[in-house]
Length: 318
Image (cartoon, rainbow, N blue to C red; front, top):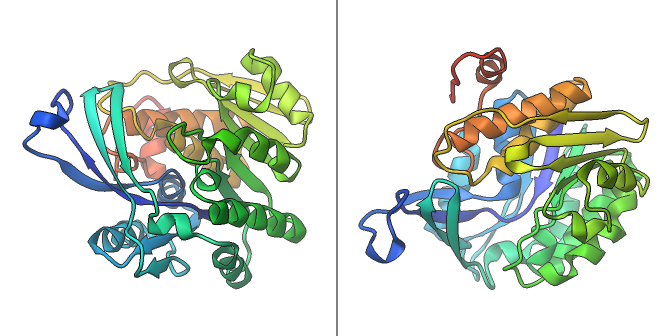
């Protein structure tokens, strides 16, 4: 069992029924959502320990976030409650299973108050960390969030802890314009980089996914994974290994969360010491499980469920 630490914002989310326009919707489904917490839950379900560090408001949504994560076995001891800021919130309008419109209510949220002090306290208290996972969402939230990511990456480097980074570009966030420079600055400290094929322009001039992965490996990361949605994924490593994985067939109920679920599956397989081929396979299975259910993380598989799906059997979500 490995132990992974991740930081970021987790929000409340209300979702319409598929095909039900928000302006006339009669019902909304309430849950929680955050890229980093989805990865934490995915790792936990697949048998590894996960620590999540973030800030929530002293409100019912904040309580819901902490409740959901704790119920999934994620360590939230280092999450902070800010009584002066609200927990972030978003509304998702599922126009179709694969087309979603999102309205964010996260400006000046508690999550944007994450600071270097928060991550330093967690890192100094958590023993035997095997991996730190970060995303490009967090530095786009605020200056203090960006400093928290930089600080954690540097502390991890000094401690010899590998850093995983998922670009996860969000154009609607206030600091998104500076993400390209931020990622390039961090590349020498990153051991494992996840990037979507639609995000390649942020980190390289190469548009071909395979050549881009090889180019990015030369810039620092020992391992680069390019997520290609319905076209699957590919990975390249510093030792010259290269592997591709097609997306698995799945009836899409809700496509949101597939990328983070892929990351969770991949990281779990990496923590298990599995081959590059198996890492991509685990990622593809986790993504297929998620798109077949409603919610960002609710459909993430357990280890037994993932193994059955890998063998061609039915998916067991819990």
